Length: 295
Image (cartoon, helix red, strand yellow):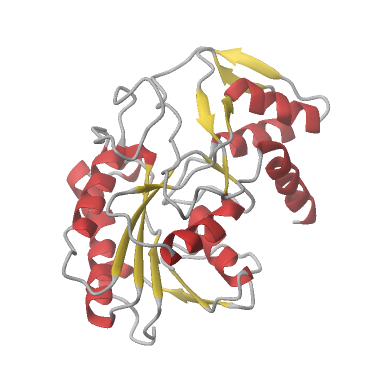
């Protein structure tokens, strides 16, 4: 599991451990938080290769990615793309050499532009995003699709709007999710800023991802990117109101909209996901708030 020190990678690594898997987590840095005893941590810069002591495995999930924009990092767009694709190439070489049963590349609905559709983003749509992040993820998807001669089953999985426990800003991901931003505002006695256009989003609880992904890799390969996202779709104002109902004294406030927001991601209609029970926002938020109290 690469990127296991970050928000999404850590959620997946711990989720796999909870399923009883033996997990090896790779990242350049890990936050000082208690991890599962079932997860072995390995600090490594994948641009320099996979550590020699990493054994062959059955499943590789590549979640490592720098989301901080090039300007903030002080690099060019080309350097930013290389910063993300070099570790991916390292892992593709590892997969070619060791032939695990499955390889998963975690992509994102961020490959799309807000103008790609006025309705939900389906996996059949061709993404046209032009931001450095979108271009880098599109390049990653193309690299993975080019690995057609692998004995390994290849899966490209796109994630959308996420929330869950254990989220903190780090140099490779200075921004946090909308929910984490709202909770931070609430803790500081500030109002919850809701855009005036009040966009729709699919709210995916990160604790669901490991179980859902297990079902994807256990199922037959589908030959196209899988949209792994919740069926629970609502407007920003509804989630902000939910937070306000759980944290008395907190209230939403409308602010001007800055830039367009992509429509919600439509979950892929594949057998592995048709009956999956995604955590609803109310339950997920209460689990998240309880985890904050324990921490």
